Amino acid sequence: MSYVRQLKCRECGETFPLEPISICEYCFGPLEVDYDYAAIRSSVTREGIAAGPKTMWRYRDLLPVESEQPVDLGTGFTPLLRADNLGRRLGIDHLYLKNDSVNPTFSFKDRVVSVSVSKALEFGFRTVACASTGNLSASVAAHAAKAGLECYIFIPADLEHSKIVGTAVYGPNLVAVEGNYDEVNRLSSEVADKYGWAFVNINLRPFYSEGSKTLAFETAEQLGWRLPDHVVAPMAGGSVLTKIWKGFRELAAVGLVEPRDTRFSGAQAHGCSPIVTAYKAGAENITPVKPRTIAKSLAIGNPADGYYALRTIRNTGGAAEEVNDAEIVEGIKLLASTEGIFTETAGGVTVAVLTKLAAAGRFRPQETVVAYITGNGLKTVEALEGHLPEVRPIPPTLSSFEGQILKHTA
Amino acid sequence: MSVKVRIPTPLRRLTAGQGEVQSQGAAVSQVLADLETQFPGMHERLFDEAGQLRRFVNVYLNEEDIRFLQGLDTPVGEGDLISIVPAIAGGA
Image (cartoon, rainbow over all chains, first blue to last red; front, top):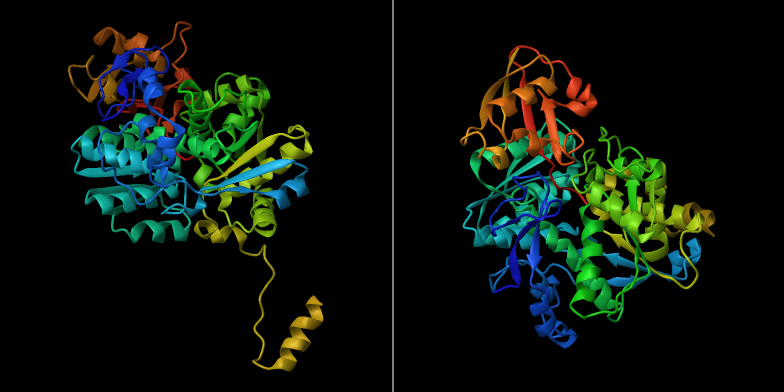
C-alpha cells in the first residue's frame, strides 16, 4: 500500500484518479502525485528508513508505488562523497558530490524508471516505452528486461555510440529517429496517444518524476538528516532540480529533518540553455531553442518543467549558469583529476557551472554545498577525444621505459 | 484553407474522441478559433486569460514548433497538418 491519494494539477489544482495520465484536461498543466502527508508523518521514522534496503526503496513511503515488490535493479543509496580536493580548488568550504553515475545503468535515470516501470506493471501494461537522450533509454530497456515487458525506445539517431550499445544490449525495439530530442519527443507523444503503451516520461510522467525525489532523501540522510545550504543540479527538462526541492520540502513536512532555506542553482550547456536565458533575462516564460551541445543528455530545447525550475531557482535565491563545450570538457577532467570520478558530459556541465558560480562568489563561507553528478563518463567518451594526452606504445624493454617515459615525466 | 488538426488525448473529450479533425483558416490563430466554433471549450483549454497560448501547450505546423515560425500569426496552406502536443518531460 502507499500514502498516495490522487493526481493533482500543478496549475489549477483540479484532481484526477490514479491513472496513467499526465496532463490536466482543463488547463493542460502537468499532473502531480498528491500524498497524505499527515499519515506519513505519523508512521515514518528515521529508524524505519535506516532498517530498509540500501536502495532508493528505503523511502517507499514517499513514493507512489503500491506493489510490495517494485521492479528494482538495486538503484540508489549512491555515495555522497566529501569532495575536499575539488572544494579547495574552487574555494568551497564544505562540498559534497552525490555520485549517481554508479547506478545499475550508470545514471540517475534508474530512480525514475524503477518507479515508472513498477507503475506500468501495476496498471497492467505489457509494453513500456520512452523518448530518450540516452540515459533513460538504457534504464528503461534494462528494467523492461527485468520485468519481462515488451519495450520500445525512441532516440535521436545521432546519439553517442556507447549509449546506443548500452541500450541495445538489453534487447529493446530500438527506434533511431532522424531528428533532435524534441522531435523524438513529439513523435513519441503521438505514438503514445495512438498505441496506448506505457511511455515512462509521457503518460507515466507524474509517477516517473517522483523517483528523482530520492536524490534529495538520500542526500539528507547521508548528511545526518540535515538539509544542505546550496544545491547545484543539471537542467534539461528542469525536472530533477524541481524534484530535489520537493524532496527536501517533504522531508521537513513529515518531520524527518528541520526545515532549511536551501538555495538551488541550475546548470545548462551553452548550446541549449533556455532556462538560463530566461533566468538572466528576468523572463517568466521560456523560449524554446534548437540544441547544439556535446551535452546530449541535457539537449532539450523545450523544457517541460523549465518554468518550475526557474521559479525554484528564483524563489530560493540560487542562480542559473551556462558553460560552453570547452568548459564542459574541462569540468569532466577537473572532476576526474581531483576526486577520481569520471562523469559524462552532463556532469561536466554541473562541475563547470559549480566552478563558475564559485568564482562569482555565489557560495558563502562554511556553507554545505551538494552538486549532483547524474551520469557515468563511459557513456560519452567521444567528448574527450583529442583532449587527453596521446598514449604512445613502447618496446617491452627497461631501457625504453626509462628513456621514453621516465625521462619525460620525472 | 482547410487543414488537418491532430488532437491530443486530454482534449478528445471535446471532439467526441476524434484524434484528427478538419479546421479552416489562413493562419494558425484562425484555425484554432475555428476549432472553438466546432468544439466549444477548446479555446479556454488552449489559451490563458490574457489570450496567450498556455505555457504547457505546444503547437506544431507540419514538423515545426510555431514558436520557431511566426507564432499564432504563422500562415497555413491547404492540406497542412497542425498538431497540438502537451509539453513532455525528459532529460534531467
